[in-house]
Amino acid sequence: MGPNETVILGPLLVDIARAVRDLRFIGATVTLNFVFVPLIVFGLSRFIAGDQALLVGVLLVLLTPCIDYVIVFSGLAGASSDRLLATAPILMLAQMVALPAYLLIFIGPEVVSAVDPKPFVEALVILIIIPLAMAAMTQKLAARNRVGRAVMATMESLMVPLMMSTLAIVVGSQIVGVGEEVASLWTVVPIYVAFLIVMVPVGLATSRIFRLDTGSTRAAVFSGATRNSLVVLPLALALPEPFTLVALVVVTQTLVELVGMVVYVKVIPRIVTQHTPTTPI
Image 1 (cartoon, rainbow, N blue to C red):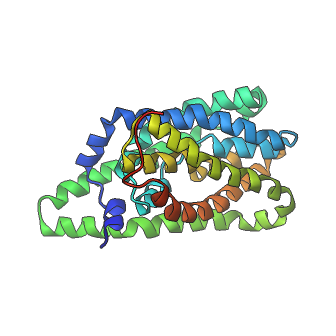
Image 2: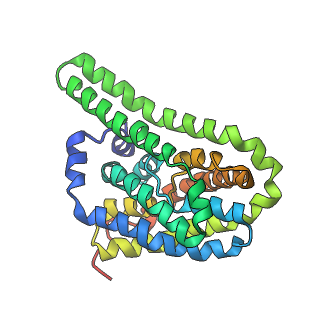
């Protein structure tokens, strides 16, 4: 197992606890995702402001930072993925509060009243609370005997395949609809591509402001660029009839982002090296 795999698969709970106390990284990711990203998204979304369904889909997905597969992709790039794992509950709770406010400002009360918060609550329990509780139990068992260590190694080895399988199922469930509406959905692709490009310098600038080290800078860039499509999709599917296209807009972002993450994994380590300055700008 190489160093990248170790970063992805083995963040011990003690490392997570230490990461929670990293206030500079928390401050950087919160500022990046809830101050800079909304400003960028507002500007980019003006290009499709005349189509409400496209606008709602773009805003839903781009205003919500990722809390799941960003940990896998950032780990492949040598980022401090344990810090992203530690900040996941914070980002999840923050977006539950911030998303309705941003939608109210950017669109109006009609869409806000149509959004069901239940999927967010379910995601907090399923994606954050339950996995962390299971990780704590598994690590405690691993510390006691060889069987426990074997169980933990097996769970770690399954992490990436399970995440990729989840993505494949989610995307596959909507891919036919994407094909049928490709003419309409094509207009949002440049917005998603532009977002991925813009978030690199914005993430780097934010990291310099908060004086983050190399691993944390890479993690912050990934946090700013990856979006919470797996959680947002149930919200989109629950919207009423006039917004049926919204779910496909969200899935389109996932397809663009997956390609972008492959590029990020190769490019970000070259941009953010051990010699990258971390002094404030």
